[in-house]
Image (cartoon, rainbow, N blue to C red; front, top):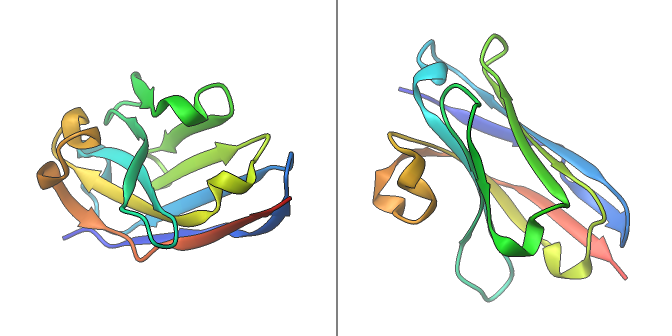
Length: 124
């Protein structure tokens, strides 16, 4: 069993930065691929970024490439999302997820665990 708790959300002006963290319980964190998803008001949840268990490979949705960086520290059981040059359209609840495969980015049935989310609001 893995429990995921996100933190670091808040209100920021456009062009600003935030770093989200996802603290995972359990000793098997390092065996999972990890990802970030987001859901804006009135919209479906969408993929943001994913990272392999080792941290060696990452993938991003096109709208955040060059602005967001996903990383993980397996010694600390923590996943991060560094978000720079934030835009109002990045406003969403951001969710951390753990899955069995890097393909969790496109196949959410591969996700085993979800966090409860943290709200990011970007003002114009």
